[in-house]
Image (cartoon, rainbow, N blue to C red; front, side):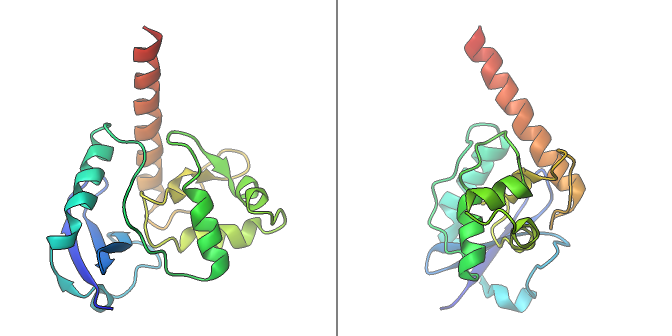
Length: 168
């Protein structure tokens, strides 16, 4: 298990991509909470990241609303359950931490769901930004609330533009 990494530019700042054996294991923003130390990212190597970079570019240009990449989510069984359910939240939509807890069959675990959400190692692709407080307000986000707001606004604008084109 030898991780490799690359850093790409994005509308939310530089993103560090980390892969092991061709599978994405991390996507981290600058100053992200729970970001592992740089020495855990391995050597710089752009070779395994072509499809990942391409799909992220398509996402940020509004041409992609779901990802099809090999990922390896490393965490506890509970965390992996939460992260898998995050991938079921449709593009441009949000749910609350309580709703997410209900979806995984643990309705009283919204706080634990929030903690697992915050430790998501593959932001954007595993869309933890789509989880909001029970009143719809923004709550914590490992990448910062400004980035969470940016991603949600971007997805809503893109979804609204697509719907308007379909309604025409």
